[in-house]
Each structure stands twice: as C-alpha cells, then as structure tokens.
Length: 83
Image (cartoon, rainbow, N blue to C red):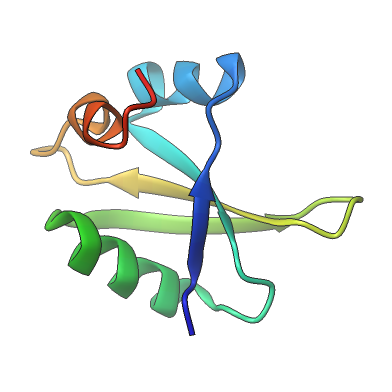
C-alpha cells in the first residue's frame, strides 16, 4: 500500500514548511501514522519527529509531518518542487 499520495502546496501549507518545519501530505485513508512515518523516512531519507493526521469533511486524510530539528523542511520542499 502506498501511504503517501501527494503533498499540499497551498499558501498555508508552505507557511508551515517555514515556520513549523512541517510538510503536509494527502495520504491513503487506510494508512496509519507509523506507515506514513516509515514511507516518508524511506522516500526522502530524513528523520521524522512526529506525524499528526486529520480527516477532512470532504473525506480526505491529511498528514502533518514534522521533521527533526537537524532537517530543514524547506530543503525537502525544494526536492518535491513545491517551492
């Protein structure tokens, strides 16, 4: 199962990249936090500090992926071509 579907590139999401070192991803509804963490760490080769998920009213599951202090989310966002 592919837990990560696509990153969110709204103005609010990009603000979280800079201020909170967090990247927001739309994820599979069946995926849990550990699966999201493992796939993100494997895909980008970085350590994840925490993962919080939320289900929206439109039946979309978003993951707020906070990276460790040694890793800059802005660098990962550049790799994904969000910035």
